[in-house]
Image 1 (cartoon, rainbow, N blue to C red):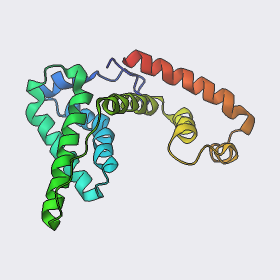
Image 2 (cartoon, helix red, strand yellow; image 1 turned 45 degrees about the vertical axis):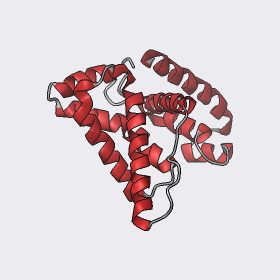
Image 3 (tube, rainbow, N blue to C red; image 1 turned 90 degrees about the vertical axis):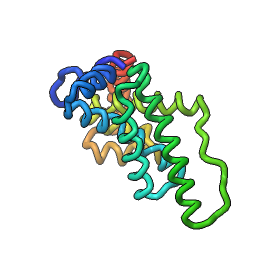
Image 4 (cartoon, rainbow, N blue to C red; image 1 turned 135 degrees about the vertical axis):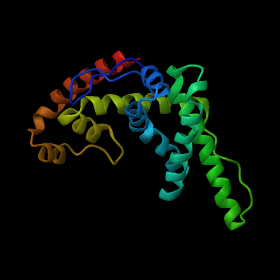
Length: 187
């Protein structure tokens, strides 16, 4: 992933490779950036498997502890998202197994995330990063229009964002163009 501009400072965000290099050099702020960047992705995996919030936190902690221990042995820091997805998935399996053992239920198959889903999760993560970097009204508008829910209520969005309903479409187009530019720079 190449650099995305930081929405607060306008300066480029470091790449995953740069963050890994800095972490290996003992830079604590780089580690915090990795956790902030990939935290939502990690939490989404046990959430998708139906784990409760405490178990999600356990998976989050175990995943980042594993990453910390294995940071120096990553073959390709560019595939950091894939490594994190795989590790969080395995930690989710382990957590589900612990829960089943604790309540003596029969063993079920662990969750399995097909390769196509891993790729989709990586793409969703890149879009989420782009939206966060975009920030402001554009981020809010695009999340409201395309995020989870029953569909976009243009009247409610116009009222909540204090914009004329007729400007939602053109604003959406400009915001999508900015997002596409951010994403293309990151690939």
